[in-house]
Each structure stands twice: as C-alpha cells, then as structure tokens.
Length: 279
Image 1 (cartoon, one colour):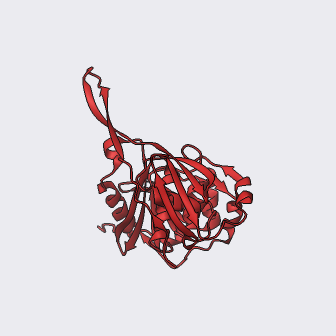
Image 2 (cartoon, one colour):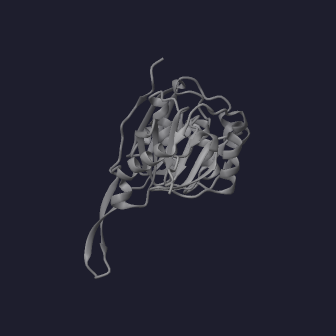
Image 3 (cartoon, rainbow, N blue to C red):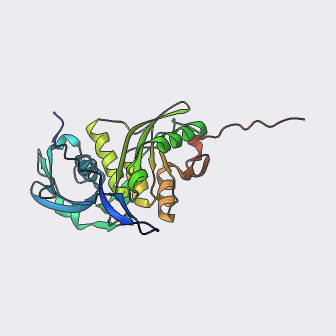
C-alpha cells in the first residue's frame, strides 16, 4: 500500500522585527514564527496546535501516531496543509474507529502550551517492551551532544524554540538522522515520530535527544516509538522519572558538554574506564 500523499508546506521559520537595545538603538532582530494549525480527520476537527511550521505534515502524522488516533501510517491517504486557512486536512482510507471514545478520555499534560494524551496511554505503557541488548557508551553520548551543539538551529538565531533529534549510534559515534525545532517540545517530538513513520525508521536502537524537560508525556512518547535511550539537556519531573522506571527506558538529564545525570536504565549505559596514575 502506498504511503500517504503529503504537501510540503513549510512556513518561514523566522521573521525580522525591530527592537531597541540597551543603548536605545533600533536593531533588526529575528524572532521565531508561531502559527495555529487545526487538524481535521475526515472533516472532523480534532485539535489546534501552535507551531513553528518547520515540518507541519510530519507534526500532524506524529500527533495522530502518539495520540493513538490512527494505528498505522498506511491507514492515511493524504495530509494536506493549507496555511491560508491554517488547517491540516487528514484523509483516511477507512473511517477511524471509536474516534469519539478516544477523544472523550484525555489527560491534560504539562507540555508547552497544552499537550494532551488521549485514551488509555498510561495503561498502555506497561505493555511496552524496549530492547535490552542495545548499549550507549559515554563516548557515544558525548558525540551526540557535540553533534547537537554544532547543528545549525533556529534557537541560535531567534531563541524561543525547543529542539529534538533522532540519532543513530555506531560505536562511539553519533549520527543525527532528523532534527526538528518547534515552539513546543511536544510538537518537535511528534514531528520526529511522523518522520519515523513516513521513512519507516525502527526506533529500537536509536537515541532521542530533546532540549526540553522530561515530563511523563515526553517519556511516554519515546517509549511508544520503542526508543530505549532518552537524553535531555534539561531536568525531569517526578512522574517522568516514574514512567521511565516503569518502561525501563535509559534516561539521562542535564546533559551538556561532558556533564550528565543518569537516572534510569543504567544497565544499557557503558561508563568510560578512567585510567589512574600509579606512582
């Protein structure tokens, strides 16, 4: 069955406005874009997301995937984003079953803006099994952090966005497969999930990096994508820690330069051996 037909409706990621600096001088300054995008499934309005507009079609697909509104990317016929109406029209090959039921039960989360988790996702995480035969070395982590640091980002020019990366680790070297920024970290996660769906990428041996804090929503989404390693330059919440323990995910926070804190899933992490001088 063919993959869905999608538009490529990326918006300009920054706009330039005038600002006065501390000297009273007018300074042209780039700021991050922000646009409403209302998702419709077979003409049924689902949700409005505020987004940078970098990967709107992938964002829509990832949102549907992570909210478990659509089981497979093969069930989607087309995703058409129209910025004149600020809408994303999703056409399915078969009507989504129990859509009303899935939308009735939802949990408002601590995502930037207002994230939602539909249905029984908290119950579902207990059935998720992550691979136990994959490892992340300390050198591989350092390689990932260095690759992220060198990556050209909207944040460097305009700030006000979160970034997420999907990376493959080959020994002690990291390769960024996808890097997405958005005004909310949950949007960036969903866009990565959508890209994985479109490109049929297996997450079972990958590393997910985010600039945002590790809440329960972030951990659940990583586990849903079957990704065993979750890394953040920020901190975490108590429920995020609890969910990470329940799923067995290897979670590292406060990861910047050579510093990190390993919270859960320690069995997958290989610490470098420190040589000591002997007199």
